[in-house]
Image 1 (cartoon, rainbow, N blue to C red):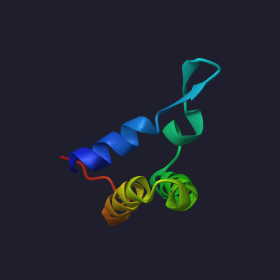
Image 2 (cartoon, one colour; image 1 turned 135 degrees about the vertical axis):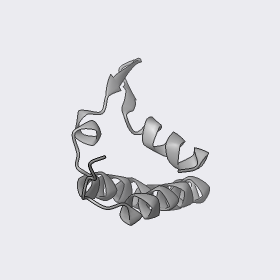
Image 3 (spheres, rainbow, N blue to C red; image 1 turned 90 degrees about the vertical axis):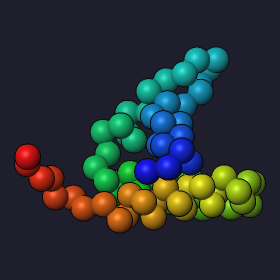
Image 4 (cartoon, rainbow, N blue to C red; image 1 turned 180 degrees about the horizontal axis):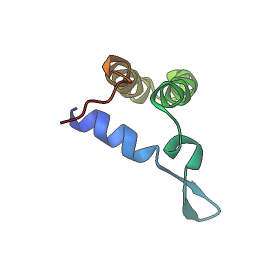
Amino acid sequence: MNDTIETTLLLNLFYFENGTYTRNESFIEAKRRKAIALLDEDADELKSIDPDLAEEYQETISYLDSLSDETTSP
């Protein structure tokens, strides 16, 4: 995971509303596939507003997509 991916994920944990930061519960509680879908929605909206940021979202989506849902035990 690089800095871009880490930053994108961290920024999605909170949102700014009514002058304060609020936990983004839907993203925090989301499983990997749902998190990808949420990021994909945002990336689509960002394409016309900020193409560079949309590309960072796509990089994060690709990273999450490359992960497995399976957990491994030590």
